[in-house]
Amino acid sequence: MSNKNKNRDGLVYSTNPNFSREEEASDESVELPPAQQNLRVWRDSKSRAGKTVTLVKGYVGNQSTLEELGKTLKSKCGVGGTVKDGEIIIQGDFRDRITELLKTLGYGVKAAGG
Image 1 (cartoon, one colour):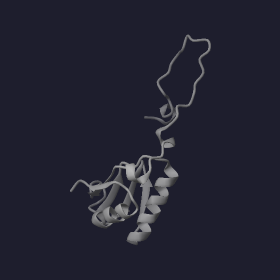
Image 2 (cartoon, one colour; image 1 turned 135 degrees about the vertical axis):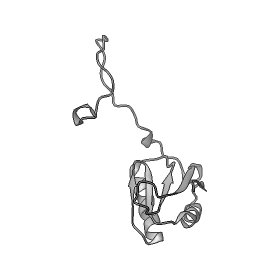
Image 3 (cartoon, rainbow, N blue to C red; image 1 turned 120 degrees about the vertical axis):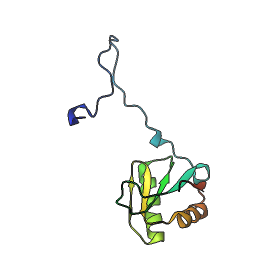
C-alpha cells in the first residue's frame, strides 16, 4: 500500500450537514491496574535469523507505561530489547525469569507458546 492511502478510514461521503470527523477515543486511555492485566510471555525465534527472543503480549494501557515496564524488564534481565506494536521484545530466552518478575510486580501473567 502506498503512503498516500495509509491514513484513510474508509469514509467517502456523508449527506449529514452537521457531520464532523471526530477522533475516536483509543483503548490506550483505559489503564488497567497490574492485578487485572492478563499478560502472556512467549518464546519466539521466527523471522529473527534463528535468534531467540522473549515476547510479552496482552498489555492494556498507554504506551508510556508499557515502555517503562519494558525498560524495567530489560534492566532486570541485563539484555537489550524494544517495545513495538503493543509488545515488549526482550533479546534472549528469559521466559521464566520475566514471568517471575512480572508476578512480583503484581501483574497477572502466564507462560505461553513454545
